[in-house]
Amino acid sequence: MEQFFAGDYPGPAFEFLGAPHLGALAFLFLLNLFLIRFRNASDRTKTTIRWTLALILWGNEVAWHAWNYAVGKWTIQTMLPLHLCSVLVWLGAFMLVTKNYHIYEFMYLMGIGGAIQALATPDLGIYGFPHFRFFQTFTSHGLIVTSAIYMTVVEGYRPTWKSLWRVALWMNIYMIPVFFLNRAIGSNYLMINHKPPTASLLDLLPEWPVYILYMEALGLVTVLLLYSPFAIKDWRAQSNSAEA
Image 1 (tube, helix red, strand yellow):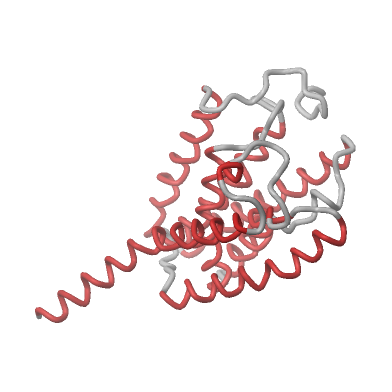
Image 2 (cartoon, rainbow, N blue to C red; image 1 turned 90 degrees about the vertical axis):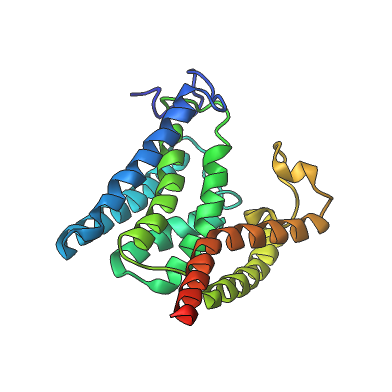
């Protein structure tokens, strides 16, 4: 148990696409398949599922902060809940218990893309399976995706074209105070003040501030891809209505 929470983990480092990585992704995939079976469940059952997911998200995030504090890694430069996925963990859990549609728009259009990237290429370093950090990472990011899918498939929520505009507008507004806070305290939340010091996909892009435009373009493409099933569904419905 001591090694499970160790700050300097002596166990195996994280291995990209190793057996634990693939196993965690497979488990999350099966979890989503399992939960979508509750589309016709009672309201009481659906409420229980939403609260369970929310409490896991909140509990996991609290444990993440407690662990960082215990091992001396908690700093305002790295641990404030300002990164996109950190924000969506807290708000996503709130969405689950309140069924807030406007938060759902961000969970679906921004959360799925961002969390999938984090799941595919997690920044775990020395913290491989079975360290706490391994489980915490896949739980937080995995349940962001699961929460969005659950609200879409089981609860019947869906984004609209107006959702795209609202999400784009508020994300760009949100970046402004975060940028100036980063300058004030020496942080790099949202990775908008400079590229991260560790290797990342941003290394393939031009230097600051041009790479931010690339990030915006990538975000736009991701949002459009996530919205495309609904756009196609609406187009088919309009075509069938016109033919009738």
